[in-house]
Image 1 (spheres, rainbow, N blue to C red):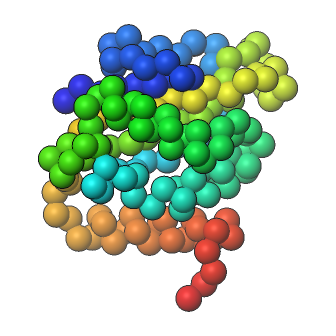
Image 2: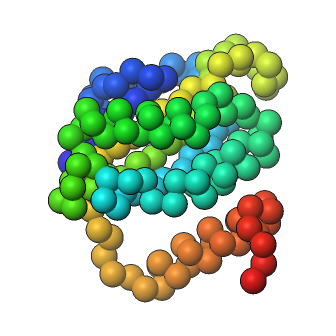
Length: 154
């Protein structure tokens, strides 16, 4: 199943989406991501995912230059081009990646003044029913939220 990719505000099919080999996400793994899906065309738990994305980025001193509303607009534009998010049979898998961006071959974060923002959209496919896997994923996400202070215990 083909993906539609938004790279820094420009939408491509998966075969034409590119990031520079000098992007520090590629060179040094400096980046964060969040993956979510839609229900009824709406990104599920969007606010929670954006809080976690920003908390993860802050741990790397990585700027997230878009507001949540701008990220939502990127999701929606990419889904529109992909023809997804328009009904129950057209639900979407969404992934946003934010990298340090393109820069010189150095460990100095200031060498990369502009982060790269990639949104990948493809049709959502329900995973196989693996209760243990779902429970482990939910527990991991809850633990991360607690450690990073995004939610209160209880």
